[in-house]
Length: 223
Image 1 (cartoon, rainbow, N blue to C red):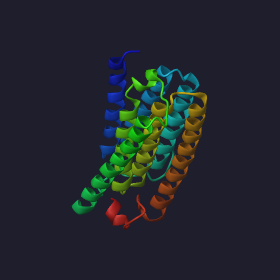
Image 2 (image 1 turned 120 degrees about the horizontal axis):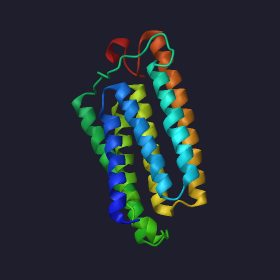
Image 3 (image 1 turned 60 degrees about the vertical axis):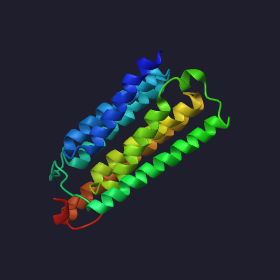
């Protein structure tokens, strides 16, 4: 498959990740995440990993999406959460988190460059032709920034899952979609699903107790 044919889905993954993490409308952000997970499944299929594509669609899109909507209170809960996140960090904190995300991205890129340039890893040429490494690094940076920046627990859950997807893409870009790599990604998807279910349960509990939707501040700060 040509490089130009891989650039379009890679760009779409980054766009969907950014749209999911930047949208303050929570239900829409969850829907965008489900679309992102389905596109990830398509990416695994195109890389020759159909079983991983199936697992991504079931665990990443269906079950994780269900957990996120449960956290919102749209699946039978008595008190649904407000659909918009109005909490904002002070400007100086936001700037510091942007800088931290950029610094982390630079370190990760330097590590990847060192592994490839120093011959520590032998990456198949057909994998190197695909922009998996750049896409994985970009998605990881977005997820890391969002996890550190957002106060709302649901938005942090979204960031946690997007960050994991970036790690999976980077791993596939470095080592190729081998059986061992697919096994590691499968374990990661299960861990992400369990974390999402627990996070959604914690969010529902906090909201039921005193109306909070984050781990910091009072109820009035979250509304």
